[in-house]
Image (cartoon, rainbow, N blue to C red; front, side, top):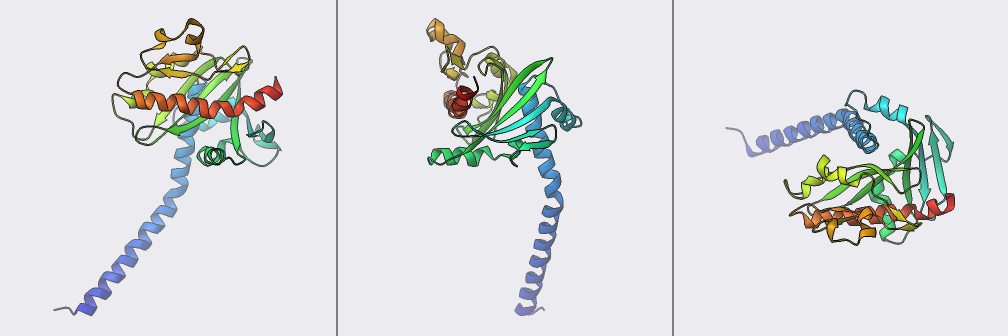
Length: 245
């Protein structure tokens, strides 16, 4: 019969050993997890610009097609430029910018930075803007690619952590995302964003239909969250666009 002291000591040693093994495993796997997260992020960026990628060729396609990464501050000035694998100015890669933290700074009235990615496809310059917001059950995110007029949408991607299957989760489907192609963010130089409209854009005035898409049936809260995410993220680029047009 083992004494209470022996049992306590044995249990303590086992806890320490298991904790050490789990900690070592986490440290060993962390680089792989970070690489997989980076690949998924790159795939979303590429997909918004209509570039299909697989897990195996994502990094290669990203390096080939995303020619420039720009970090912009909240008043529209360029903070950093990373181009063709080298910094031309500054020392912050737009790809590595934590958009969640930057948008939190914005919500507190603090200075913040935003990422802008540049691609050139078939001789046409494309700007890709990362997005982040809050859905019904957790974070939502995405990317929107626009023509060099900073207004006409080429494509979008959206993702979510836990929206309701068959309802809000439909934001990550091609049927929903394809509606955004050809929509306009600006009208006569004035920022309009794009709204996800309950009941459909048929209910909008004719001149506003170019700034809207049909909401998801039964997914009103997530649809509204996408509208808010687009407005909250896209408006941050207006000072930069104004200075550079």
